[in-house]
Length: 347
Image (cartoon, rainbow, N blue to C red; front, side, top):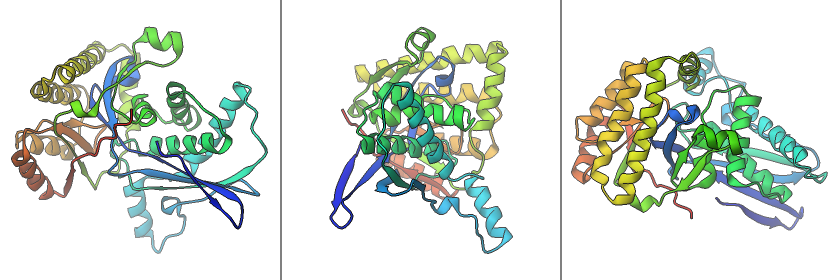
């Protein structure tokens, strides 16, 4: 986590800059919202950046995604197809409210200073990389720094989730915010006994150096968010559909298996679990032809493949540079970008 500040001599104001990163789920998703287990990490190839500084009035400044003026109707439709209907201003507005509510509930008195807050994000949109929660997480960090307040990481992740699920009514699992708060790969156990007792799961950091070579690939033509998928699965889970309940147990078991493989150095065994994670998902949820093609193209090179989130981006392992070059070549022909994630490994 970067919490920086520099003094501007003319105005005697401290400029606070914070940063948060996209999340990739290595294994176990989407069981994190259903008392399951996952392993996820954040990577610094992209970021959501917040700038906050003291001003006479409180202001949330818009970014490019918040524009309401367009050159044509076609431009408006293109923007909606690419980014959806919402920018980041609603995220920051809800973040400020949840932060205030948390402080009030904890009897933390905030001083009367006001601030201006703005954001920028390079995280690809609507691809299951947790770009929205990255903005919220970075916003929370900025507010904590501005007011000199510390929130434990486990509770901070909960507050970020509250912004989305309670304030904005967005369906979401907890793993995104945990990885973004801890800023290191984390094995997360959301067993009901932990959740009921303390309100959050059992989180165990994992050294990124234990990971095998990992790639992330994503489309640039996706426009459907994860809410639809999560809402459908939630209804089936609440209805106690047997296949869904069984799948949640297996996803958790796959996470345990991958954790053991990482710790024992048996990295070659990860691929089968990663592939199974997606195949199980495919057996339960309707997946677009474009996403299936992306998975199959990756696997045709010998790489493993599954969703990083709820579609649009995938993650997997590969054996060597020859495989990676083949993967990149085949994907690029289909306008799919492939990167090696720079896994954040703060300890």
